[in-house]
Length: 285
Image 1: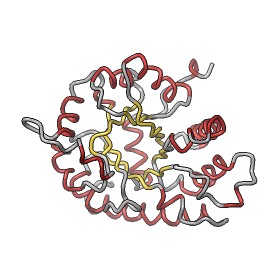
Image 2: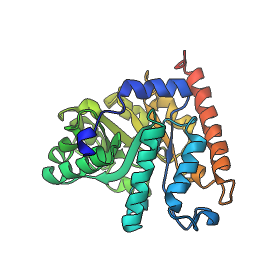
Image 3: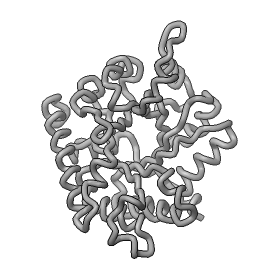
Image 4: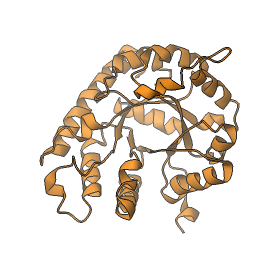
């Protein structure tokens, strides 16, 4: 019955309003590693969910999005999936204004992609899902067919190996530029967002020329060494247009009983830096 009750939870305009209300474009990555969470949680029935719940409760007023990396839940089998389900249900029930991202990097032939989309958009009711573009139009459009959900396409990633293929030169452009340009011709392309790593700040100017109005999900700030100031120099648009993710730098700020408090402290530091940038760029009323 959950699929039949599926409704739209977030629009682009609502996301923009939250960004301006909270003076933040922070996304917190919920990448829960049982080897890193505080020891006192391990005695609980569901330590992953309890860890997430406390992080969420401590940081929800500072962030506009949460991004569970699905691999960190799949790794624990059925228990991990149950923890993921409880986490997204908790978010949707208690903080419906928060934008949710399933970082699953799915993508396959049409019928399979449709099933992936149903799993994350309908059953789990995420607002968005990261998708790999390598198999092209017919592997991505099934996700875009869910018109009230967002597909976040991998464009230029922050990992070292991202340069193996993404920046190869084609006849006229680099591969990542071709991905951006071709994706704009796909059905319901207005529901696309793009992953662009914070460790690639020199590329943001080019990227914004191709996709000036779309949101960019930006991992790599913090533990991976990306600079928020560098990202914002060319990444911001009139709607802000950025969701900057921090995972380890926030959720593992402490491995003690004060872990949620320390997470909030680190989240606040990023939010305050974001607020300052938004004021300087005259993006806040």
